[in-house]
Amino acid sequence: MALVRYNPALRNFSSRSFNSILDKFFQDAFEDNGNGSGFIPAVDISETDKSFELELAVPGFKKEDFSIDYNDGQLTISGERKFETEQKEVNYHTRETRYGKFSRSFHLPENVNDGKIQAAYQDGILKVTLPKDEKKELRKTIKVN
Image 1 (cartoon, rainbow, N blue to C red):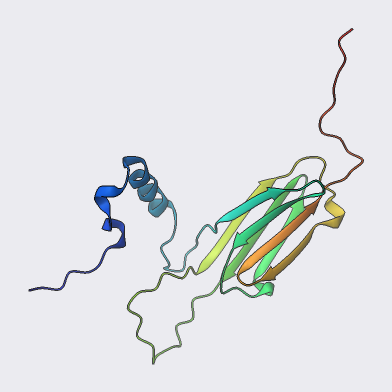
Image 2 (image 1 turned 60 degrees about the horizontal axis):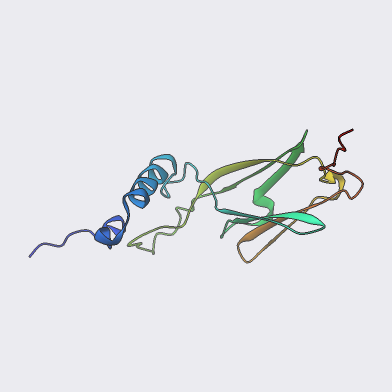
């Protein structure tokens, strides 16, 4: 009997839809699988009455690893987690943690108050709060004469 390397992509293959298989194929083709050149962090975007919120899943980073830039209605969040190779006593069997650089850009609505944008990093989540400018209205009702 020979050992066959475990491939999580083939797990429950018969229960997966064709679309999910294609999604996984293209995701793997355009993302780095942990070899250090880059990745795309998952992001959740929500809205309240007073702000928009972005939450990026970036575990293992330090707050100084991030760069957040706002320019002409576009917010760019980037960062880098360097791969540490000095752990000679550790023999990994699998390594799924993401390393490398990332950059995500978001086009913001006109009613964001860019002077009050805040960011906080806790428990592997980078949370960026984009307060709304209550004076700017995006929607107007036009009366037909």
